Structure formats: C-alpha cells, structure tokens
Length: 202
Image (cartoon, rainbow, N blue to C red; front, top):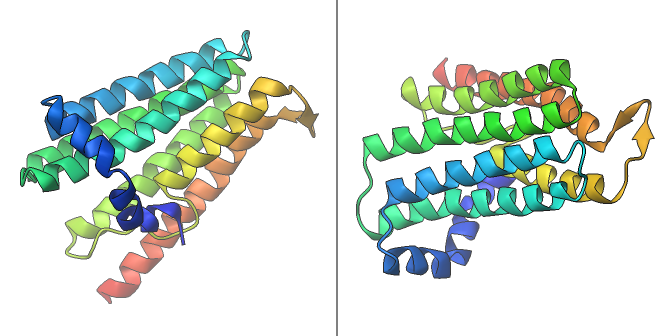
C-alpha cells in the first residue's frame, strides 16, 4: 500500500485549508497553479542547497506545501461542485511538471545528472501508468511500491537529513541515494501498475 491510497483520510484532515482557500476566493485551478509554483521554488532551493545546505530545509517546507495544495485543489473542486475533466487534466499536467522540477533540483544540486534522468523517468512512468489504466476503462491505479505522496514524504525527510549532514555511504550522499531509490523503485512501481492493469483487462 502507498500513501496515495490514504488520500480519503488526508482529504478529511485538510478541511481548514480548503475553507481558507475558499474564503480567499481561490479556484481549484488557481490552487493547482500555486502548487506547481511552490514545487518550482522547492526545486530551486534544492539546486541552491548544493552549495548552501540549509536551503534544503526551505525546499523540504515547500515540498510539504506542494503536497498539501495538491490535496486542496481536488477537495475544493468537490466542495464547489466544480469538478471537470479540464481541471483534472490541468492538475495532472502541473503535478508532472512539479515532479520534474523537484527531482531536477535535487539532481542538479549534487551534480548527479545521470541519476536524475533515471529517477525522473521512473517517476513519470509511474504516474503515466496510473492514469493510463483509467484511459483504457479501468479505475485509476494508485497501487505499487511508490506513489506521489510517498515520493514527497521521502523528499522532505531526505532534505532535512541533507541539511544537517553530508555523510556518504558507498560514495553517495543522502540525496544521491534518494535518486537511486526513485530510479529503481519508480520503474518497479510502473511495472507493477502495468501488471495490475493488464491483469484486470484480461
């Protein structure tokens, strides 16, 4: 089970944020755009943290904000009865850009471009397989080893660790190891989702 499968629980906990967004007059699409902008800030912070480790803490805080806003946009749409295919498409596209910004920032900050490429392809394929199942008539797939909520949680924890220590294991620091995890487990999760979808289609 991934943290994405706990989304109904999280939706109940973010009520105050949804109320706040509504009082501010924000639309669900506006919240989605804000979430993507926050992710861009996180990526920039991680890039700068290569030379200024305390910037990892700012990046971790922004990743947390991105995760919260990613829940708020959908909950706000449901509360306002403004759910739409266009809004869903916008949300997914901006989430993918957010994922790329965060991982690119992490990779560039430690100059691990090869690992960054492997990690971002694993992440994008995981998300693609989750929604492609829906495109062929199945329910959207959130299962597998590593979903988006899991990735954001791991990024936040790793960023805090990187802010306080530059220790390495087997020649890789904590950020580089996180990229390894995203690369390996991301592709495995994509293959899991592919398997689940094919099994249900047969």
